[in-house]
Each structure stands twice: as C-alpha cells, then as structure tokens.
Image 1 (cartoon, rainbow, N blue to C red):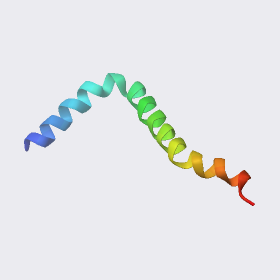
Image 2: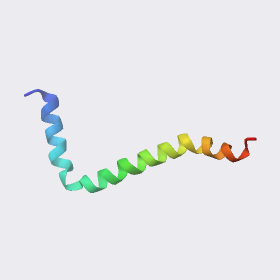
Image 3: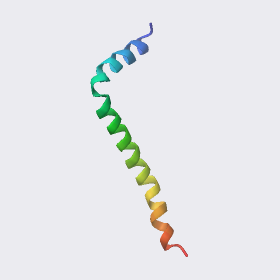
Image 4: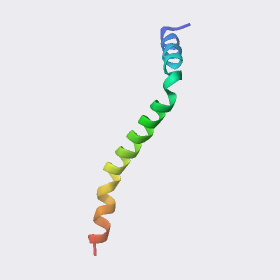
Length: 49
C-alpha cells in the first residue's frame, strides 16, 4: 500500500469522530466564498438601468 493511501486512511479514521464539525466548516466556507464572489453581482443589479 502506498504512503498516500496509508495517510488518507489514518486521517479518515482520525476525523471519523469529528465528521459533523468538519462538514459544517466545509459548508460554511463554501457559502462564504460564494457570497463574496456573487454578492457584488447581485448588489449591482438593482442600480443598473
């Protein structure tokens, strides 16, 4: 087995107890990033004629 697979299995086993927290962090990071990217587009829409 390669070192990469061993490392991934180790982290998967370690993070098994924290999967809810990790999921929340990932989802909130994606929402934050999308709001920062798409926010200015929606903010300008009402002001354009």
